[in-house]
Length: 509
Image (tube, rainbow, N blue to C red; front, side, top):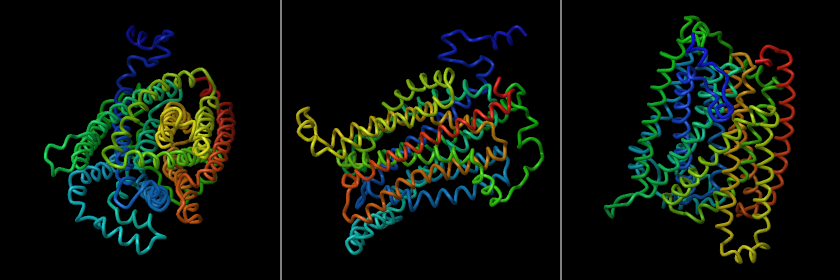
């Protein structure tokens, strides 16, 4: 009993800031942190590789990103959502996690060791794709997407990994086994530990993108892919091993979870709800609608900034290894910035209201993104000033875009993700499973598809346009989306406050 009291003693001031976790809770918190670490490492490695593959592919460019997100990623997200909803009625929580994770891990392993080494067998030659593009110039970017279909498939699965595994599978599991009283302490710690994955994955990506080719006939990018995808496959296996250990040794401990509530152990089948009924309940929920609006606005506004930024990165680094090395270096800096922001963010969550923590991300993006678009739109008039400081418009655009994207993502990891996940906790189990699936997977994809669709429409309406030429229109749309985002945060905050008043016990906790 004495040790138990010591484990649950009140934290000192420093520990309350840096490590607000009780000793006995480490058995539960550390495995969760490792799972999040491996998931985020895979996400970051594949995210950088997908951009390097698609943007620098023969006959391709940053313009294909809009068409990929609109015509490939969004339909694939719909299909995944339907399959996930059906699988959630057939499988228990543990098996559903494995069934969701395994196809991604297997494909990434096959891509590095089977598909890319035999690329000529799987997709048309670059010369053939160029001929098609010359014959049908109006469909140039769509032909690039189809001609490089293995790259496109890699891009789609990497995009869906972020929603399916991070936003949906991991956080659904965390919400299931975490009490409201634990959420502020544990979730901030998960996020802080996971930021080390950005540093590790960035360093790995940068290192293996600078592979020295010993044999003159070797493919350096192919070597890099084998190393990177091999690590992705191993990390995927480790996720499943740690997850299984959690079910066997942690969730059987009543201090961490009531075993009677665990779906895989009750022997009872979960109630089956039709997909149409689930959608009807979810889409008519104002609470979930506001959460979805936050996700959609984030995806749309960030897409506006990153599309222009990556087009400049390709100009500066046209080689895939150089492009991936740059993204690796960017990811390392992002990791350190995110860790610092996680420390600040955890204390913002502890000291201030949910609204204050949630509104910081859109306000920061609005301010910094506004500066970025001012530079892009008026870069011609600013050319003499740029030359006077000894740089070029392309280099400055790359640096400014990296700062905006990095600061936004650091704040997202530290505050946006955590406040969004906290908003799910008051919901019942049915809405947590299917509601979260709809909002995170479909909402996240709709956010990116909205930005991509808007840009694709501009490319069609203005033949031959580039990202720089459409940037004034995109800048206006960016400001509108950020304003809607801030209003949605305010509306959701009011509903969370109302729920807290209806549940005084939870509010007191």
